[in-house]
Image (cartoon, rainbow over all chains, first blue to last red; front, side, top):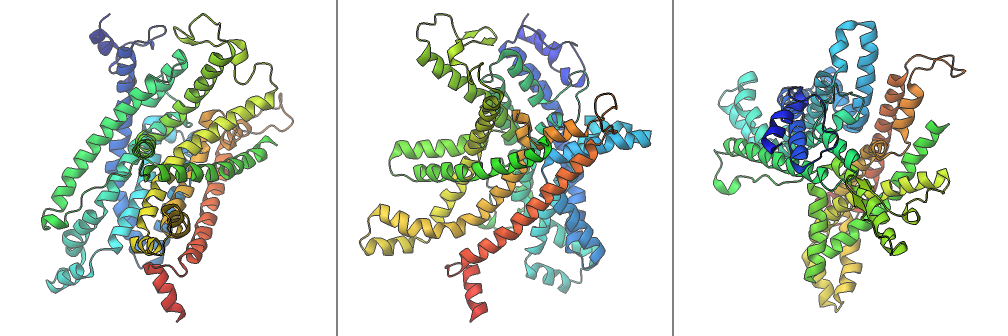
Length: 268
Length: 268
């Protein structure tokens, strides 16, 4: 069996297309590369969707934390504190069992107990809280002069926010936000190791890496493959965010443009 | 009962890991800034490699790898006339005397061994993080301070121990505090390493009990157990935040930093 056959069989295994049974007794390099790569689909799915949806909610949270209205401020502060102050791992567990018991009283919540949506909700809230804190810090450090200039031009309310405050906030927050995105992708590996079950062994990259390590008693092959995939993913994220960073900073003189400093990998 | 012990397990893990990680970090940072090229390369490689690999993968990989490494080296020492290869296809076979822990050992030794492996893994990973923080902090101490010390005729090791080390803590504390928070939040990962920690017991005790097997039947309470864990971690984080704040205030006292200056002004 050539490697192409294996890729055809297992390339989309993690989404349920292709061979039903996972390999039982042949664990060639090709098998491991293909299946772990196939698992990366889930990591990318969780990461991308949580980032996109979390971005907007994070802006709301940051604005809420800045707001003078105590109701908004308090609720935003508590949301951020709860999701930043507790381990993501426990959040996954709690959410899963919460959804389970909700499902018993209201069957509508049924889908939430499966990973593809339930874990996404948790990741969405989690990344919103972390990003909200970053955006809040950026909002606080917007140069006073920028706002004053906007006032002088007669920009107020929504227009001022849309044209001055928001772009400046993004520009200041971007390096930290890049790191947050990298952490989020790393955090997606936790999904199938917390409560959320895999259906028919459709797991993420770490799930398959763990499968191979368990079967072969040899951690030295699957985990480095996984690490390699993640390093590539991280590089792609850095590249994409770097492009946005360039665009956000394009009005500044070259010497003022900040480079994104890479600070990798801290557990949340 | 095990549930309450497991809280102690977590505290014990934190209590042992934090100083170990700090020690690893200190040695790593010293190596990284050493003038001797081999040490410097070693220190930098340690920091870069551990920080570059996804966290959970590292945890899962390292425990097996360490276990196999120990068994392999004992195998080489204890059974030199063993002729069969250690890796037989998918199996990892060592002679009976090299098994760790010995298969005749009592249960508590097995548990302690697992715990020790977990602590060591945590210490290595967090040692790399703290090495990075301390490395930065040592460089942040104003160079004029060291120059002055040299001018007074101190040797370079005297300068390091009497000038750099006492002053670096104020620069290191924000980073180390962050790391402490992260360490707290990483403790549930013990569960993945096979230690019977909080998460294990919450799942075990919370699961639904029927009257046939226990005197205290109850439905699925796992949600409440995990809610309790969530609150436990939130409180832990809050307390640490307050303590770190106090510590920072004490350390800034009399330092040549902006915060130290502000403190001096406030008093005068």
